[in-house]
Image 1 (cartoon, helix red, strand yellow):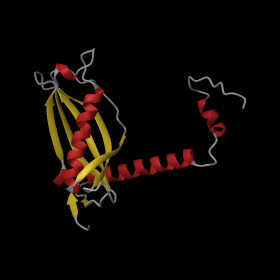
Image 2: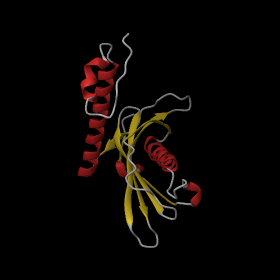
Image 3: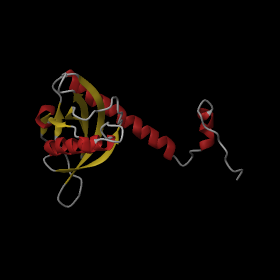
Length: 183
């Protein structure tokens, strides 16, 4: 596959009014409900880009910045920030608007790694990405850095020579008490 698509070609936006059935006991919208919506928009965006079925491989950096209230209009915007051979990173921004006052707040930003699949469940190549503004280039570079950092961390902690003893000094300033058996 050698064709490319612009970021705008697969950009998706959805809005939904938050109902009491989406809330927890404190009257705030469940984080799990928001994650479900985010997964749906990530799927739609990745499928639109790849023109095939996609699955969620990982979710990175889910920070709930501000609570979402019942009656607020939640809008999610998703775009492809990065493409690999068979994977894509979908950036998602979540905002909530008080429809009576018009006040808008940024509630969440997250990154979903999606993998394109064929009808047999095998990973398939995705189109390349045309970056046509500085923000898109920045998002692609930030995705590369997150991938690089994650791979480095995995290599460090999964190395057969890894010993927790080499890292115990990191725990000295944390609220933790270590009581390991002498074995």
